[in-house]
Length: 346
Image 1 (cartoon, rainbow, N blue to C red):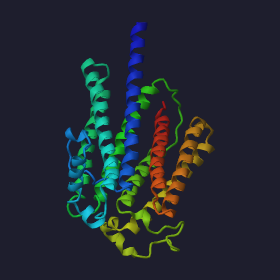
Image 2: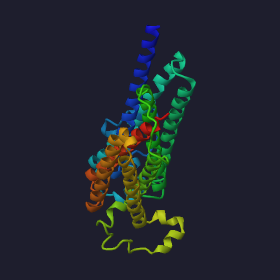
Image 3: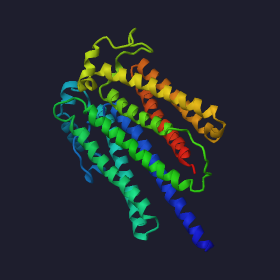
């Protein structure tokens, strides 16, 4: 009996470590994906070759061939016609690393999953969660190519709508892997009777995911490169290149200044919501077990807001903008841990 229990514990350790590895890889992929967008590298590889695409061009002829394919798309003709082969190699490598990471995530998830299925070492419910994640990983690959395809014919950039779906789906995969990791890693966590009411931490995290999606709109439209002032937008609360009538149409999500405005307002609302959570937590002595986690989320949120402000002030400079995206990973991670601990009640 003792050996059986130890084996079960070991299995949980191995599976939780596997989930943690996938979570870290997805986080790295999100950061690299952000850098790929910020460096305008996403359209450098114009073909989707699942297997042969694993091998990058090494010879000069193959590099010239890849460059010639890039020269056929609007981004090169209208925006980068003076680009040299050496400059092309830089953007190629960013997109290549991003795609390679996608393949690695898929393989690292699939191979252990097949083993777990064959050995029947996890419950059917857990296995269903794992297969759901794997299907989402496959779908993410399709969405990635669908996004790239939008920039190969009539545009010089990918569709910001497809970019937003791609980023949001990446965070959903990240959340699901991290959530399952927390469940396995903390099976013996202490269960408390009191929690933050009204599902407020969950609502906060959902608002944060929406904010990340809008952030992808900002990135896709290069909206961070206009109205580089704060707290006003060039001296005004509302951008002066449009009027309020745009809110009567969904076309407002195609206007860079409006998208930046929405991103700012949503940040203020999210901050106000978390101040309310903070107040509830520290005024109720029965919620003392959650105070540390609430403070971690609060500081992650403060840093993320500051990085967002600096991103605007410094015209979406690559390093700051990349740190801003990394900050969103930290914020989602700390928020999800708070949601998890808040759910552990009788």
